Length: 640
Image (tube, rainbow, N blue to C red; front, side):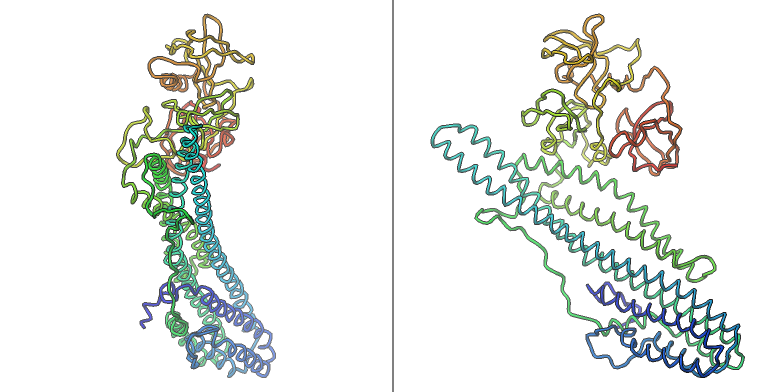
């Protein structure tokens, strides 16, 4: 086996505890050497007799660790006392000191300084070793969570299969008795759609679990083992560097033993971590096979196949899921690329500090390198899972994304019953039970949102997957109108406002609302800016107030089509200058505004926050730019 080809992630699969134990033994040996030098500083003052006793003590301690240092605590083949180069070097070190019988206080002081630095360095590297173990345990926990999600998806799929069978029996019974047959048929269809979606979700979780398992054993765990191997090499170099400095100090202070110690110093170059690691790998190789992956398991007592459902309704859910998946991938890819460049730079900095320690502390760089690598793995693991999800969906439905014009849904509250455009049911409640697409006015339950085809009439068609911040945008909260919170900044007095008619009569229940009758002509004053379900209108000469958005229709564009442009005009043409609070943030990444109420960001620019600031909504904050108030993602900026 070639020493240059040693790669613990490849040569020793799934043996992280063994590698960590060997590295711990090496770090313990380094700690012992630091203790040895510290104790020797005191013993040097008592001359040769006590020095010989100390060397004998540490020789015995080293003898107990010879196997752990060279081949690990439990090698798979018999250890025939083949010592590592590091073990041999330390044995020579003790032999040289055993022959030394002279000492003085200056040498003792030098030993104290070296021992202190070694103890600090060894402790830092041992903490880093513990971080590796902790992170490996976290990856294992995350992998097990993925497995648990798969099991939950399987249980959900089984439940819905049994529920579908129950609805089938009810439908057949209703058809036989000609009683409520339509209702039973609709219930069966709804249960069938839920079963399809649960099945698809289960298949996706299987694919994600398989790819998580593959990545864990093929990428993540080998990378951590290789990182421990790098720490091993780094520790060996640091160990040898410290011991070499100790020998140099001895040679400088003891001319009588200079020849012996300089010989030991030159032998330090023979310590080769690759050679030691080759010896370790040769004695710890095992037969190992990656665990098998998962496959689809049909519900017990229910005939099914592993193919994903391609019924139109199920395909629509998959299309929406694919669009969301690709949006998230578009957000993660630049972050992963930036973090990868940071990791590469830290690698180079570590090598530079290791070659020239006077430039900086390589221990600190190693700690930063591990943290950055862990962050990079977080991005890559999520991207890996998203790619598996997207590939699974594409393998089933191809690149078919429907019209590829997704709705821009925003959570909304409804003070009055509002019809869901998808299922026809009623949306009601002030806890954001529904969502509204502002461009086209499409209103749905939150549970129906993913089932809606990507056919927004107000969105441009595109053949390419959409890469935007749509997922983050959907998390924005909308404010509930109150006396202390006006609906929006009024438009200019000379602007032409849309005219429309009232579709349904409405009776006001508060001083801020306006009673209107069916067919009455109204003028739009304020649009449904925050998707609260209310607009402000004027009826007649002096009657103004709030009415439900869905109770009015403006122009030929439907209930909300003409309102969007009016809102945008009102948003940009304000009567007063926007006011900030004096607190500034700096943009970390570039961001392109997705609507008239947002600000575009350029990395590095500073923006003043309003008094609302980070309290605007979940994931969004409000600021002033170019004299206009707007919002932008809070994770794209940092506070100054």
